[in-house]
Image (tube, rainbow, N blue to C red; front, side, top):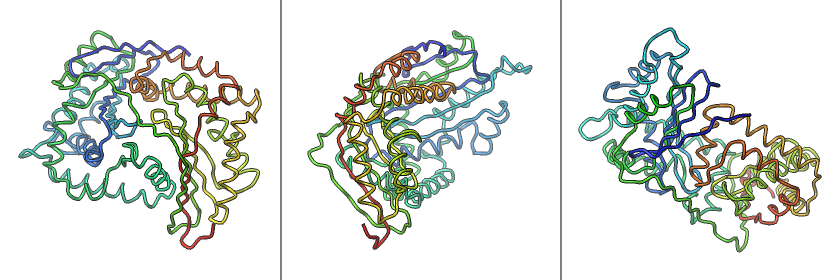
Length: 427
């Protein structure tokens, strides 16, 4: 699979990533704002994109803004916030039809960028505050989102695992913020924070599609240039404490199915030489239906409703999730830890390694097949400060040997076992 080479340019107040490609019939623009994780900012940063994408000075209400987007052949605008290691990233995404494929002579890309610029740099402000009505509505939506985590027991157990595992680390901060901070937050407070955010966050803007490069670059400069007090240097420091002793935490709740989640330190992040071995380790261990966790915990012993693992690329965590009967805690925990030990001993075949490499590569190619997926992979590289061609990513997975995976397994340390069980449930 041939991926067009990304062109990265340092601009005034932002960094531009241009990816020309004839593969897509639409043009995707993504603006990524990055800051350090700070607890006092989390709630504001969770609410901010929700408020920004509802109204601008030129489109003063949700209906007007949505109508303006729909008039541009159904242009789509969305946003979200996420933790990447100890960075907090807010993404604004826009997908617009390519005017080259339309009979209409409307300068579609420029019209869409004008709206994008308004959303980011020209929000609806009244008396030094965000629009009160929009602010209160989005505040209520965020409050519901925070409350609903408690109802989704799998998400809640994962949050509690990270709360305990990363207690002294910024990674423990909740991406949706905190109810007590939300209650106190005013429309004026949020606008005050917005002014700092729009000036100080590191900004990377991606544009991918079939377009004229120089013309598109001029357009991007017109709509994304900003006065910034920050340069675009990325710091990639992540706190990695040594695991002196693993901890076990059991909490009770109203539920039928227990949630057994485990957190391991991999001491490996995106950009490290053994990152590719970690991808294969995870695939063999719990990443696919053919993995050890699925086959042993779920299929062989019928202990779990689900059993899987995933890793956090920028924080060096490996997380195991399983849903079990509350009475099966000790047995399930033992079998999961036995699978880690089996990985350390190399109890898997060369053939399984090759099959897993193909599964990981297919997954990667599938992600890179979509414009948004490709942008996410390229942004991983920005965050890690480790730039690499897309083809090289695939080749590095192909080069992983069984011994590399065994060596990776030797580095992995159990940090925290978290079990959410039924009230009065036996273990």
